[in-house]
Image (spheres, rainbow, N blue to C red):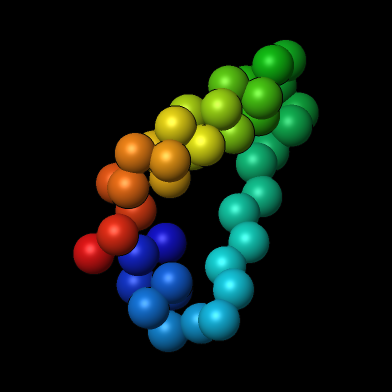
Length: 41
């Protein structure tokens, strides 16, 4: 994602939702990482 974010105007992330609540947990974790600024290079 870091590399893509540096090369694109927008980056979309899609989570696989075929395994229980895994996609929700992954999205929540990604939200925490983005809000904490861990996505920046």
